Image (cartoon, rainbow, N blue to C red; front, top):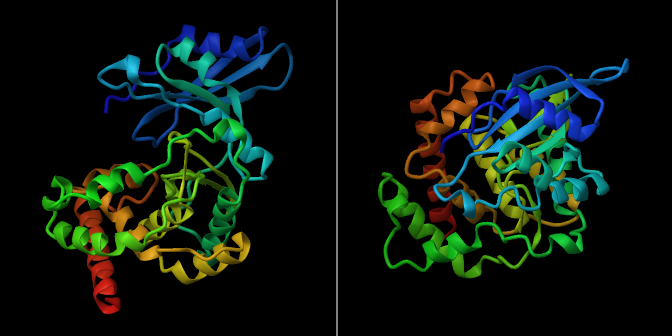
Length: 319
């Protein structure tokens, strides 16, 4: 996926003036992270006032740019989260304005002075804070204008689960066929009817912290409705890759705050491991940029494989 180039000086100036006609650009710099978009910090000042910062987000362009409608609904999702007390960035320039300036799908959001925390001082407190934030996301009211957002994962799942043999992404991994077979067995009892706001990429790299306090959940590139357990399974699988033993603490906190039990968790953790198949190795780039340099491509492949093996073993024990 080709990441867009940096905005030009003229585009940065247009962004600043769109925010305030009297704004002047002071500085810009690229943010790390983001495998699917280009992120830059724009610092500007209006008159003699204090400087302000925003984040510009430009998204990779499909082969046919006219069919690329992202980020559909992202600014609306961010506003809905704000209303529901979810820690997340605020939209500054919506999709229509930002995309016109950049010449590609884009958005401008508020700047949050924090960093991902992949080495927490208190692992269980870290997990509890994340669980509270996720529970707030999943119990947020869905505004009428978001009711037509796509339902995440269900289309791909139906295609994979109704196939007569393991799809190619499964076949190319040494444990993929066994994983697919276990998922197919569980699939008839899995409830996919929920249409709640979900993140779809809920991993620690998309969380900003300061002084061990969670500030915000970021990267709402794929605003979707769907099954909350999908986010839970995604986070717990990612935590398992880096050796974070937080599942018990996370689930207890999440279920207490949300008031609902997590349904079909084994299936959704299996889906989380299937999503990067056949090769999770490229994910190492994201870990490296965020400070987890010990997680090189081969190490994350081994961690991913071991997690799949553990899930299949859990399935066999409960069969």
